[in-house]
Image (tube, rainbow, N blue to C red):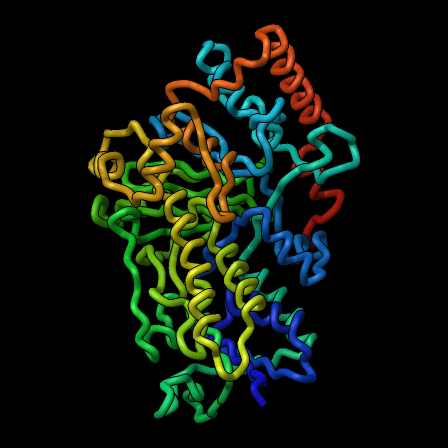
Length: 500
């Protein structure tokens, strides 16, 4: 009698259909009813065409065939993100997935690289990273059985059309019993005694009752905000960008195997390569640039023919004060917004769903479980927030009012502690399984000229002769691995080319 029997997902798009697919995969559909309500008249934002490697876990859990998924979403592979003009104008570095170099003795490789840097023998950590070097040459392949070669463990994610991904998951969900209902919601009915959501009412008069409601209604937060009144924590004093112009352009040749993020005077521009087109967008702060000028910046910095009119998105970076309140859980943009600088939008949906399945409620909705969910997801949001703030704070740019503001702003204490510790001898520690590991933090910090004063003392336990021999060997192995890889376009043509 205590079991949740009916789950109602409000809103489609990527978040809604990821939620529906998760329920279709893990709930026994002869014991549970899952309904998704959406309207074709309400557009979706579609932010999230670029992802991080953890999406493979989501797709594999659903038992999705990777080649089939890529064909149907016009997808490509992603080895990392190239950042241009962030530390200084003209700078270029890559936050690559996977490892850097090869750990020596008991220390991470980057500590040894710092010694090399201080000796004046290397100025780019990316020279020792297979994903960075492969990306520079537009190469890609999946892992093979190659012993101790880095080719045995290639970390990658995807670029894809978010609308087609939602369509793909819709077909997956409906095949497994999810019931989609077309219609606009005009009223949310609450239980007079408990304040829980009892039902949603559609414009055409239909009433849809449920036990558990998943709010995937986007920025409006139809359930979590408008109906239940859960507030929003605004982070725009740390992340002042509040808008984005987005526009597609013709596909790139050669086809890159990485996302690019190029800093401009009051924000940054994304470039996401798909099989059939390129996604572009200019994320900007309207405090520091006129909206129409921001559009011009985008249009003047696109490679190739523009395929449509630019579309404007507005947002406030931050998070809900509670993601789960009573019998409603906000997922996707209804739960908060993090600008797509590190491609975390879809991951936050995935993370929310994983935590929900771990703490799936009974009809009693135990508050201890709700509190645990909110605490876990809140921590993840805040640590991702810190990582994104780092890109703005760690800069030497002072050429515009925007960059002067970012360089001099106070940052969260949790981020400042990381920066202060790193500045001494390059020490970094991952806390409580936060999303981005030490290597990710190091790549961004070094890439944006946040160079430690020294390096780990135990590096010098290795003799100079052995040190030089090991560093040369690591470089040689990585270069050989990259030479072996085919081009990104060749790999796609062989395994997962879309039928265009």
